[in-house]
Amino acid sequence: MWSRSVPSLALDLVTPGDEGWRDRLADHLLALTPVSRQNRFLASTAESMLRRHAETTAPACLVEARIEGETCGFAELHLAGGEAEIALSVVDRWQGRGIGRLLFTRAAREGWRRGATEEAVYYLRSNQAMRRIAEGAGFVRVPDDDPAVAHARALVPVSRLTRLWRTGTRAFARA
Ligand SMILES: CC(C)(COP(=O)(O)OP(=O)(O)OC[C@H]1O[C@@H](n2cnc3c(N)ncnc32)[C@H](O)[C@@H]1OP(=O)(O)O)[C@@H](O)C(=O)NCCC(=O)NCCS
Image 1 (cartoon, rainbow, N blue to C red):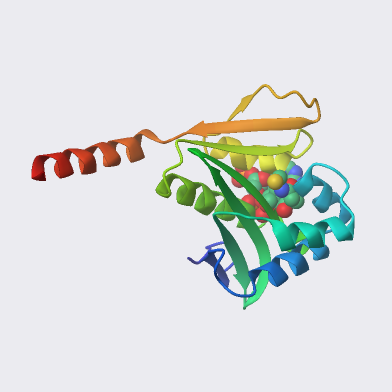
Image 2 (image 1 turned 60 degrees about the vertical axis):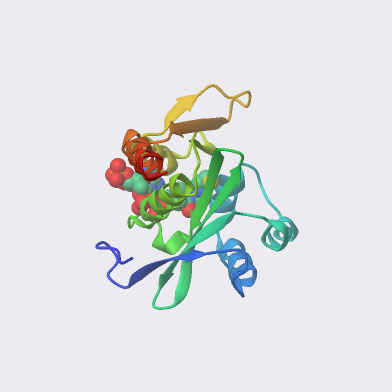
């Protein structure tokens, strides 16, 4: 997928079995500024924690944003039961160019495609860019115990439910 705002941007779906993504994710996280790391992990995060995250995270899949082959962003999609959670980051020098919104939209779409009935994202309340992305994608704030953290959720879109219902009805009619 190519972005209109960054002509040479590519978004690739990465699955856990693919090679090399943990190293690329580690390099990406380590390249983030302290403020972006804090926004990504909702707290100050030491380099050792970032490396550990890249070594151990177990997403259902990731979306990787690349410009001329260089990674500039990652979204992780985690699935548990029918719930998906999305976390993402864009390297600082490429922020504000629409890449975060594209990464989020692609990850959310992948979550619905993989059968999630609900999706969630957590971000610091001060994180205006993430708030705009979540709201733009139809995510709605719900109460969270942590006063510094915003927790936004979305239910499976009606269009997808309708598609599933039609598929189910056709399968039932064939049976
Ligand atoms: C949050 C993040 C992913 C957004 O990615 P991005 O590529 O910079 O965002 P986009 O360019 O797609 O912009 C999305 C929206 O935020 C707005 N925005 C971007 N930067 C902003 C800023 N610094 N302040 C306020 N709004 C901002 C844009 O105008 C756009 O809104 P609009 O389309 O309604 O006008 C990126 O800033 C980032 O990686 N931050 C560190 C990690 C993080 O915060 N992750 C989220 C929690 S998991």
